[in-house]
Length: 322
Image (cartoon, rainbow, N blue to C red; front, side, top):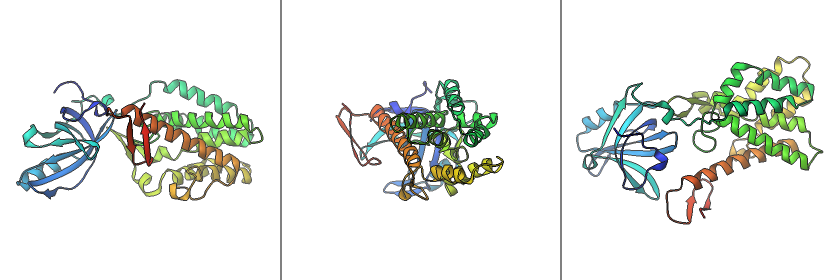
C-alpha cells in the first residue's frame, strides 16, 4: 500500500488504495447485479461514503460485510466516483475493489483524526479569560470546571462536532474561545451588558459535548449524546457543579442555566427555550456565527471543482468560491 491518501484530496476517477476509519455501515441489500452495502469512512481530512458492489453470491458479500465494524480501520481499494454531485468510493471486482480490516498498529492513527497544534496556547488564553471574571459566584463556578485538571484535559481534547465545525481534537477549545472573543467584542460595543455573565455563558455553553462525543479512530457520538444531546448533558453538568458551591445566588443560577439551554437559539434547532435576555441572545449569536463561518470556510477550502459556485444543502444556498 502506498502512502496515506487523504479523503479531502481525492478526485473523481482516481484509484484508491489506502486506509480509513469506519463511522458506520448500512445492511446488505440487493441491486440489479447482485448484493451491495454502504459504509461511511473518515480520516483527518473529512468523510466520504463508500459502496461495495458485489456479485450474486450473497454469502460472500455477507462475509465481507461482517468482517469489520464501526470504529475499525479498513484498507479500501477502489475508485472515486461522482454520484449526484457528491464524491464516493466505488468498490467492485472491475476496479480491483477490496475491503480489508486492519489490525491495530498497522496504521497511523494520527492520519485518521485531526489534532489542532496550538492547544496549550488556547488553554492559557481560556484560563486568562477565567481570571478576568470578578463576580465571585461566577468565578467560583468557572474555577469549579477549569481548575479541575482532569476536566480541563478532557475539554482541551474534545472536538466541537463530528464533521460540521471545529471537528478536531482541540476543536471544542478553539470554538469556545472564538465564541467568548466574539462575545467580548460585542460587550465592548454594548457595555450595559453583564460582562461576567457573558464570559461565563460563552465558556460553558458547550460543556455537555464532553459526554456527547468520543474519539477513537474517528469522532463519534456516545449513547447518551445521541439519547439526550449536549444541551441536556451540559445543564446536568452545570447543576452538579453549582450544587457544590455554597451560597450560589439563585437568580444567577437561573440565568447561567438559561444561557446554556437556550444557546441553540430556536426550539427547531435543539433549544428547549429561546434566548430571553440580551446576554443569552449574544452567546447564541456568537455560537451560531462561529459555527457557520467555520463550516463555510471549510466547504470553500475543500471544494473539488473548477466551477465558481457550489450548492450547499445544509446552508440552503450557493457558496461563491472566487
